[in-house]
Length: 261
Length: 303
Image (cartoon, rainbow over all chains, first blue to last red; front, side, top):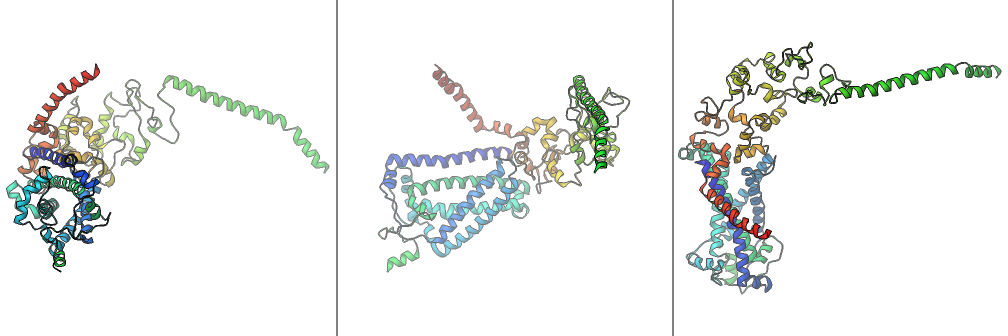
């Protein structure tokens, strides 16, 4: 069972990377054909923002990017050791990056609760808006109603998919370190703790590949949809604020308060 | 002043012929020595071109066997023994004849052996004479290697020296670095006879990791056993169906049949891939593409 599942897991991993890279090709071709590239990169019609992004989420995002890339590289080396003698180094690097990611995740959740969590809350309007957002990304629709700072797909990705899958990664990862403690409950279903750990390893790898796919898509859309914001987020450009922006919901309580005045 | 002048005159007159004689004598000796060395070596090299004179600084067997060029005349098998290896080995103070127990000074025509036989085999089974390995020998004699080796089977099973090394043998107990180094020598130790199996050891976390020098990845003997190795079909083998869960439990907590379902991957990843429906389909499509599209395009381009 585990043998065949592992073969399928490799196939699915390749498909997921192909989807991520294919998305880039699809978006580049689609944006060129529909003239969106010209509008954005030549005529500079970029989305407007009504608030300056604080430094804290930018730093957390930067550390998060670096440690997630490190985790992916060192983790993939464990399954596919492509050069000789890297096991111990990669293992230690993986642990350091793992602790960093966990700390940043906790800090970001705290920050979201305290400061900008509202941006990630999905409303009924968002869900109803989803088909139009999808049509826009598939080049069937020209635009979609701009309801809040993030669209429904972004809210789902940043507020649900990434945090949930990161928790799954953390749990499966720690369970490989301490299988008896964290997988004792699963042993009875999988046929022993070791078998449960083998399944946890499969889940860990699959989620890793899924996150790589999602990151490829996220990178593509960040670059194509809002290149200035991408530069700004990594501290490479100054952010411009446009007061006339006015989407339906104010981004943060601070902006709401400012608008009320 | 006068007396000094006489002395100096006497000094110039009388010793001159002696000096010339002595110079001539010295020159002759040097010339003879040079010709002996030059022609002697040449003549020797003519007889045995692959063999050179023993090098000073070595003693005993190494006078001859310490020469990298020494080899059997007919088979051209090297008979060289590295002095460095000997000095670094656990047996640096052990006389050669302690292992080469069949050595006979009387016979040089049959590689110094009293009876014409395999001197390597004899030496590699001599460990039991010194080491108190009676328990290990008992286990070994029941193993597939031991049974073949001790019964004199022409195929021959691996004996002590075949796995542990010979002149460069080191102690696992005393030399921890060597133990770690030896752990990564699966290709040299087992692969020299079982290369097909070594190559098929290619799953993710065992074989591939092992071949990438991962210290925590299992070497062949960690799963198959060492002195007690048996063929996989044998129930006593560490990798038999019955014993596999226990073997996996050496590293995996609470290993059971659930985990053992991964075992076919360890030496059979390629076969497992070939069985996969999607990969089968991909291979068929690629074969069709190569035989129809690529072939036709190449033929068209070659016109």
